[in-house]
Image (tube, rainbow, N blue to C red; front, side, top):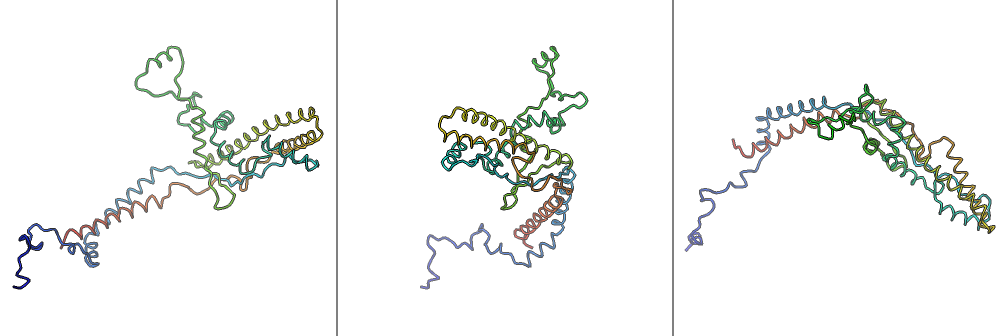
Length: 328
C-alpha cells in the first residue's frame, strides 16, 4: 500500500477542500506594482483629503490671535559682600563667620539661592498685591471683566437672582466680579516664563501677549517690582540684625566676643549700604528687555502643513488598504 493511500486520521479533509476556509496569507502579499497601480487609480482620494486638511489649516489660522514675546536675559547675582572680619584676628574672624551663619541674610546667601527666591516671588501674592496697588495689574490682565466707564468690576451674570442677591440689591450692595490677589498671582505666575539658555548660567525671562508693547511693559514692571520686593524684605531683615548686633556689642563682656560682634556689624552695614546702590538686586541684567518684532504664534507653517500632509497621509493609508482587500 502506498503511503498516499493511507486514510487521514479521523477522516478529516485537508484545509484546501474545506468550503469556508480562511484566505491564505499569501493573498495579502503586495508588490510595488499593485500599490502604485492603486495609488494612481485612487489618487483623487489623496488629493481630496489633502485639500480638506489644507482648508482646515487655513481656517484655524483665522482663529488664532497673533502673539509676540518680550524677553530679557539675566544671570544669578553674586553674593553681596558682607560679614567680613574687618581686620580682626583669625580667632575673632572665625567667630564672626559663625555669627554670620547664625544670622543668615543676604550677605550669607549664594547667588543661586537669591535667584530661586526671585522665581518664587514672581508667583507670590505679595508681588501680585504690589503690582495691583502700584500699576493696576488686575484691571489690565482681566480687562474683559473691568468696566472702564463705571470704574468698577462688571456684575456677575446669572439668569435668576438668588435671595442673597435680592437682599444685596435691597441694601444697595453691588454683586461685582472682583478679582482677588490669589487669582492675580496665578495669572502673573503663569504668564512669566523662565527659560534656561543652554548649559550656561543665563536665563531668559519671557512674557507673551498679542500687543508687543504691553508684553514689554509688563516684563519690565514685573521684574523691577519683584527685584524691589526682595530688596525690601532683605533690607528690613538686615536692619533688625544691625540693631541686634549694636545692642550685643554694647553688652558683650568678653573682648574677643565684642570684636567678633563688631566685625559682623561692619559686614551687615556694608551689605546694607550696597542695597542702596540702585543696581539690580536679585539678578544681573545681561540683556535688557525687548519685544520681538516677529510673531511667536501662530506658526503658520505648522498650522497649514501638518493638517494638509496628515490628511494626505491618511488618504495614502486608505489606498493601501483598498489595494489589500479589493482585488482587481
